[in-house]
Image (tube, rainbow, N blue to C red; front, side, top):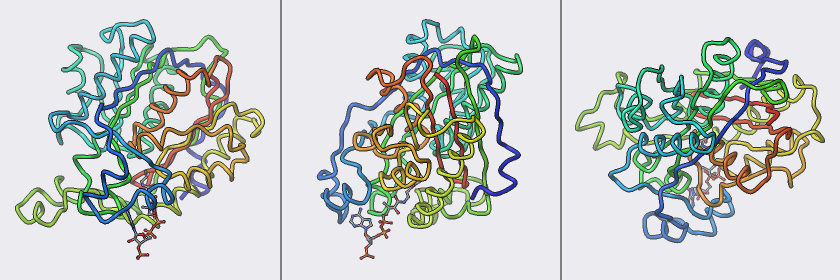
Length: 339
Ligand code: UT7
């Protein structure tokens, strides 16, 4: 939960970057709430009322996270008018890695047919895209890079327990990418705020498959390779962390709720999003949601939402966009961006 120490990771003052392009990759298969009634003991009414989700995309079994990320980067590069080989940094935010090693970012390079530039994964759950954006921004401001692809992508459907109605109905697959370049002084990050509290790690995690619990017959039979989540605890922390980080970033950016053009929170549950928004004072009509269409795509929700908002003409140059996220770790991050 954000506390006094949290301020150490708050940065205010314009950092001149620009998001030169965005792109997404969303699997074509749509799974509606009613379809899940055949899978677990649930109902469209319950899922809609408790989460706001109506449907989600589910990837074909042959698809890995890197496939979605590569396509999203390719699309974002096309939008920015650059070739993927022109990027000089690749940051992939994901919890559903292709392999334990190498990084999913390296698999993305391979699928894009590019090489040379540093490629790394960020493991920050649903906060991953904003973590990646923060890293890209600071690398660009430091002069270390000039064109960074930040992509959040997940194939959550491969790590959820399809027998656990408390989790499997929530998640979806997808990826969203942004090409971050130096700004000319008009656009950039006005303030940001990020942090983590690893003491709460066991509240939301995938227990097996790593060095804590390597894969065994027992770990597989025991369902330890899937998402374990104490939903109510996550819910409470998410509301407080997302709103606190956003309010603090808005204060550091010296803006009020009236200055905000669009509020794009991490999309896990409409009740979390609404509660967080309310605490920032931003009016409901300024909150942008794709949750009903895609469910919780973890690190992909914010870049997909930003892309769709841009496509709908809801984000224009000069607009102030506030994003805030919360995820496994626990991690949180907020960003006030002048587009
Ligand atoms: O991206 C960050 C990671 N995740 C999140 O942010 C998720 C955060 N948590 C949540 O969104 C919510 O806690 C959930 C949507 C997971 C659960 O909603 P809730 O309102 O907290 O429900 P609950 O866990 O308190 O469960 C209420 C009831 C229970 O039944 P009983 O014990 O009252 O009889 C559950 O068994 O709802 C039941 N339930 C369901 N019923 C139908 C739980 N899942 C389902 C389901 N369909 N899918």
